[in-house]
Each structure stands twice: as C-alpha cells, then as structure tokens.
Amino acid sequence: MPDTSTPSPAAAYGPLHGVRVIELAGIGPAPFAATLLTELGADVIRVDKPATVGTQPDWLTRGRRSVALDLKNPDDHAGLLELLDSAHVFIEGYRPGVTERLGLGPDALLARNPALVYGRMTGWGQDGPWSRTAGHDINYVAITGALGAIGREDGPPQVPLNLVGDFGGGALYLVVGILAALHEARDSGKGQVVDCAIVDGVASLSAMMWSMISRKEWGEPRGTNMLDTGRPWYDVYETSDGGWFSVGPIEAQFYARLVELLGLPEWADAQNDASRWPQMRAAFATAFASRTRAEWEQVFDGTDACAAPVLSWSEARAHPHLAAREVFVDLGEEVAPAPAPRFSRTPGRVAGMGPAVGSSTLAQVREAWGLATAD
Image (cartoon, rainbow, N blue to C red; front, top):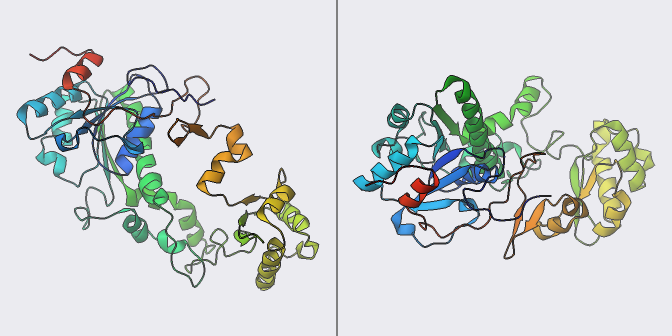
C-alpha cells in the first residue's frame, strides 16, 4: 500500500534516506527528477529566487524545503556553498555556462566536495552546435527521429505530450545517472558530473527501433510498422458510443484469442498476411463499432487477447486494476500517482504539497543537517 502521508523533509523513509540533494530551481525535467528523488527518501533542498517567495508549490516542486537565495549576494552564495559541502547531489537545469558564471560550476564544487554528484539537465547537452540555444520537449524529440516516427501513415507526426522527452529521456535518465554515480562514489570516494541531455535520453529510449532499422525490420515511413499502427492488430478502434479500444496481440496465441472474441474466426490464419491487412482492419473496425466500449470491456476482461479500453485521466483513476494496486492516491484537494517503482522493505512516499516557496531559511537547513550555525 503506498504511503500517502506527508512526512517532514527529514523523516526517515525510502531507499534514499540519508542522501542530501541541493536543487537549483528550474522547470520541467530537473524538478521532476528532484521530486522522484524526494519520493525515494532523499532530503532535497530547493533553492529558489527571492522574487518567487510565497508562491505555492506545484507538482514538480513538492515534498521538499525551499530556500530563497540571491546567488549574486555574497552571503547567500557563501551559505549555499556551505550546504553543498555537506551534500551528496547537486542538480541544475540551466543552459551550459550559467552555473559556472555563478561560481557554482562542477570544477568549483568538486574542488570543495570531491564526492559530490553533479547532475546537469539540458535539452541539447553541454556541447554541440545547439547546446546554448533555447528549445523545449517537442524540439528535442523532433531531431532524434522519435517524433517523426509517431503517427499514422500519411498523417502528421503526433506529439506524445512531454512524456517522451522531458520526463522519459530527461528526468528518468538524470535519476538513473545520479543513482549510478552515487553507487560508484561509495567505492571510489569521488563524485563526477552527470551530463543528462534529453536528446541523448530519447535516442537511448529508441534503441530497439534503431536495431530494427539496422535489420531492415523497421521502415522510415511512420505508420507502417508493427508498433506504430502499421498492423491492424496493433491499433485503436472506435466503439459504437464514441469510445476507443486498444489491441496489441503480437504473439500468435494472443492474436487467436482476439479474433475469437471479436467473432471473426475467418481471420485466425491471417495475422502475418500483409496482403489482407486492409480488409482485416476494416473487419476489426466494423466489429468494434457494433458495441459500446463498456460492452467490449466485459468481453475482454480477464482474457489474453491483449485488448484494453482507452481511458481518460479521470477514468484511469477508477479502473479496477489500477484501483486495486492503488496506482493513484487521494491527497485531499488532488489526486497524485503513487511512487514508482515499489520497494518491499523501504517504500517511498508521495511527495505531498510542500510549504510555500522560500519558507525555509539557511539556518533551519543547517540545523536539520546538523551543521554548525553560521556566525
């Protein structure tokens, strides 16, 4: 059962309990990575700008203390350096060169704290012709080839929210890199820089497709391959009430079950007959259009047909399987996903709504971390 309580930032929980993280406030993947570390038990301190003091945290800034510092002010700068001397991880999501100009670059910080893991989150990376130009998720996904591969044949590329770039190729790869560097530092006593670029992460996520391209098993035109709606048995179909149903029985035995439950036994031997796919697609569409989504849910419930309804956000929360696993938790004023993955002995906790931005002071953080009070 996910822990839905909102612990104090110093409470003991999760496999990362005892890990101290300093995060420079930013947007998108870097704060999401910090949220994930928080839910795994790390004690994360977010450094915000004084101009943002008093604003309420959103989902990407939750579960952690916030200290408002003017990094151009010598006293605030010195106070942050003192915290960094006792930190295990530093996270920044600025353009290349910004933290160096602030006196917080990796050379400066690793000289003071040799075991520090320095996490850098960017879209383009720390080097390359575009490294210092602006961009967002859609741009990063676009140049890797991934965006161009998502969509139907003869249709435009379909934007996969910011799940593939910011959060998949960005935040998750930053967390993986930080955890790997922390593990290595336990033996070596030395920290290092984790250069996490969204373009790198998205390319890595696409490794299976690149392998299939090399083997001539994946074609360049989108919508013509197995996983991009190029197969009638890996697609979505509209139901009689305007709902949608997904099907994906790649294995022969699962495909056989699908056509059986659709009432289309005449298609049992045609899964890999490309010449018949247009007619198969039409037959599937006609079958799904004959019943409501709810009726098809009853047909496929508990079967191996690899068929599932396409749900809205609100419907997903109430789905029996997700409800049984408590995938979403009620925090009172909002619903939040439970921490993932799950741990048998040291479970994480949902990063509940934290205090207002800038509500903590350097003195309070020093005390919490057991540091001597500055004069």
